[in-house]
Amino acid sequence: MDTHRIDNPYTGETVAERPLLVASEVEGLVSRAFRAHKQWTRVPLPERIALCERFCQEFEKDGERIAREVTQQMGKPLSQARGEVKTALFRARTMMSLATEALRDEPLPPVPGFTRFIRHDPVGVVLDISAWNYPLLITVNVVLPSVLAGNAVIIKSANRTALCGDAFARAFEKAGAPENLVVAIDAAHDVCAQIIARQEVGFVSFTGSVRGGHEVYREGAKRFIDVGLELGGKDPAYVAPDADLDHAIANIVDGAFYNAGQSCCGIERIYVHSSVYDRFVEGALAEVRKYRLGDPLEAASSMGPMAQPDAPQKLAAQVAEARAKGGRVLCGGAPIHDAAGKGRFFDPCLVVEATHAMHGLMVEESFGPIVGVQRVADDDEAVRLMNDSPYGLTAAIWTRDQERAFRVGAQIETGTFFMNRCDSLDPLLPWTGVKDTGKGMTLSKYGFLGVTRRKSFHLRTQT
Image 1 (cartoon, rainbow, N blue to C red):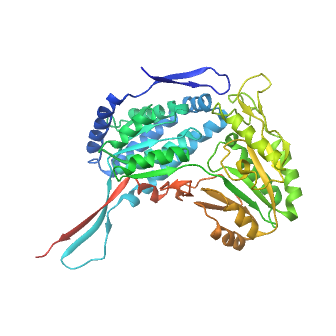
Image 2 (spheres, helix red, strand yellow):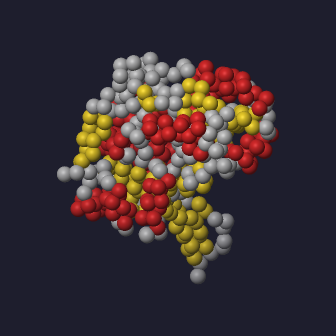
């Protein structure tokens, strides 16, 4: 039997070894999920909401185990993993609060002799191919609206965090969900393609690389089904001359280095007005030097190891390119171990005098604890550089002038624009992106669109 191994990024020890779904199992898996959907779609919405509340309660009871498994699988400090559990529950309950309005029939203006309305029907089976960097949040964004809408869900977590899919399936089972309504699998790319090919599957959500997104989108296109894609970011921050500098420094550094920089919406490039550039750099350097690398299960550790084995060397190559093209590396920039000689860490790195000639650092995704700072002369130069990337997930400005934020934000090619904050999701706002970041959206009332299809009712009541 084919398996994959999950290693602990800090100790190197095996966390789990998982069997992979084989091709001969696909038909039974999807058929069982579809039967569960057909049963579930007949359940009234208030009962679906009640099940999801019981899911939340079971997930919360299991929260410490889930958080520790996140840390052991991908290296995030335990305090941050515990925070992810709480945020996942908050998002789940937010989507539950929106479900009644989002899924209700939409009546049209009355016409004598006719009844007309639009219904939001479930799509059937939803395949959620989730990522490892926020394995609970990315999954809850899809699973909860799917179940609320009347679908069954197959969760294919990233191999790195496969135990997280189990946590969702386990909590739904304990909550009393119909058998096979929410199932978790481990599968290779070719087997996922076979699942997408099944007629019972009506929507696929994928979070991951651009290359992976193209592959999943091609498979979905063979059947004309919708595919939601969130494929990464190179999110910019602009510090305007009127910014509250102390707030900007603390907020931006946290947004760049939280979760060891392994965040699609983390700050990866910083543009600072010339008038405040030197003061910003001095303050940012002091903030970066505060990080403590170590065992992510220990409270004193504020940054964990890199989740993926190849990440430190990729980041080191970006630093080398930046240095060769005139960048000054003020701190960090190399793969290291902690004081105990453990962990695949990358020393948090701040590069100044950056330019877009440093393609890896300032244009392509880094996905690690590294950020470049570039000097700009005015808002127009900041806008031009912020848009000079193949990605468009979030962007942010630090300014005291809301009109400036409106003016700059209107010009930025991005899914979300922030003022005086970053790396944050409000579940009442749609989470979406442009360009190579992908298509579709999760969260908010619009997060139900992908997991439902519109059905028009046009009834003549008088003949």
